[in-house]
Length: 40
Image (cartoon, rainbow, N blue to C red):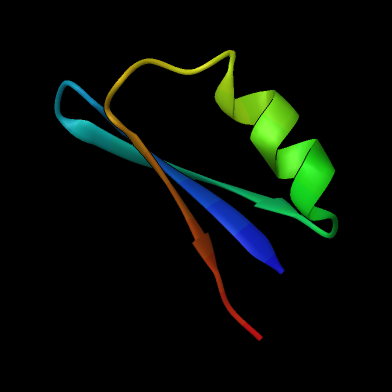
């Protein structure tokens, strides 16, 4: 599972993706305060 963690002002938002390509595509829509990680 690929996880994008977005740090936005005082909030932390988490988005989960099954495919790496999908997650990398989604990263383009987030600010520079996002981290892409993999967990299993």
